[in-house]
Length: 323
Image (cartoon, rainbow, N blue to C red):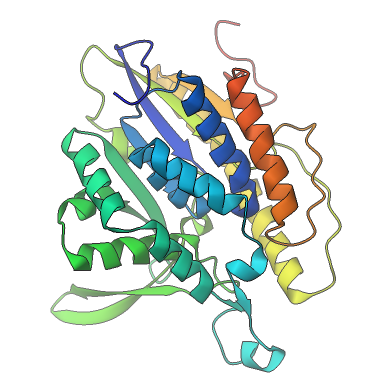
């Protein structure tokens, strides 16, 4: 096993939220936790939006986390999106083009990564990514390990496409279309960021019958956000205002769903663990992806993990049972 497992009678599950630039804290925490040697081998890993990229790397292992750490500490906004002209925005489906992001995803998702994910899937581990079917207003769960196990060029293309769709917040980034067939007809289904529907992954249906007899589920929730309002000055332009809208909307849902997952975990008797960006970290973010601030966030997450992050046993304002 790649990481030490302290209790073989537990069934560890990792739920990663979305967070755009805040993902730097998440990959820092995960990499530091891994290097500390105390991180479990997660049986199920889930993610949506930027969390889908983190989930994929975490599922695949330390080498891929290193590549992702390099990415999240070296990019800026222009490396991921291309702004459209004011005139073009009137006739297009988004404020920016996601072509640079698609290229980054293509670089990450290669044949070696697909082979590694397929290998882990064969061991019984599971990787799930969420998108939103915008037409049907439904949350869609993609079994990425099963897709990787097909081992075809088409599966690589589909894997990349799903990750891109999971990151595509509507209006800000263009949607991604999947051709489907139902009722004897073919049509294009519009998919966007999974965070449009859910603040955290729908773990309930995934866990039906998944927990082996004699094991106890230990669920880890990694929120790539603050758990209380966090002030920053917003620039008076479409890109920054839209970015703040996405951030505010996502955080509100994520906080609400954090309590929802906690309630479900307590009902099931699971061991609940929560991590989020510490309140004492003050960001001076100047743009959607501020390289300097992401480097600071990554270091804080890494240091927190190496110093043995004190996982919260309940969301803020609640007292965990037994305490």
